[in-house]
Image (cartoon, rainbow, N blue to C red):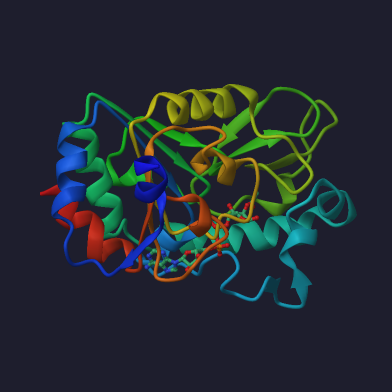
Length: 250
Ligand code: OAD
């Protein structure tokens, strides 16, 4: 019964973080799940915040194997714009705070749905990029991979094996990389504290990491809005990531 009461969602603002800091200080194992809201702090649009459209195209259609098969140059043009946007911004105080928290916690895992590399650039080390990364391309046919720094050359999409270079992103309808997913589930399973930051919790299997089916951790959501995960978490802090995480990191 006490546990049920404790699980009741507490809605609050970023004030009164004292007991969360205590939980963080005493935690042996912490898992963090992030989404595009944390990168909004760096000036990037959230995934659904742009209305699900790029120019006149639905992003779900672009971010799919079918979309790529239909028009690979169009899909690469969209990702090249996003890659340029990612490179043009800096990690936010919220990204930096997570990197500092990692240094204090014996067992720390950061599972992100973001493909913008901002956690890696902020210095986080144990990062699981659930939906891939937009700093690499991979071949549609063989195992070849290559990093790319600036826009991918639209004239060089064809790979010598007969396949095509595509972004190393998990598209709609595709499975997450098995090793990354298993590591994320294992981390969620052993966590005693989980922070869920800046995600609408609408995309599976990432969102399931924060549910009681997967984790027995005390789960704290940090998001200015209510989300699909709100009914599942132990505590919801209605605030921006950079209003909360830097306070926890000091
Ligand atoms: P969404 O756009 O669905 O959700 C962004 C969330 O961030 C919303 O709940 C906002 O309220 C919240 N938010 C906005 N600003 C914030 C701030 N400053 N601090 C904290 N939270 C803030 O994006 P995701 O949940 O990341 O997958 O979307 C998940 C996945 O959906 C993406 O990785 C993508 C998409 O399908 C793939 O491409 C495979």
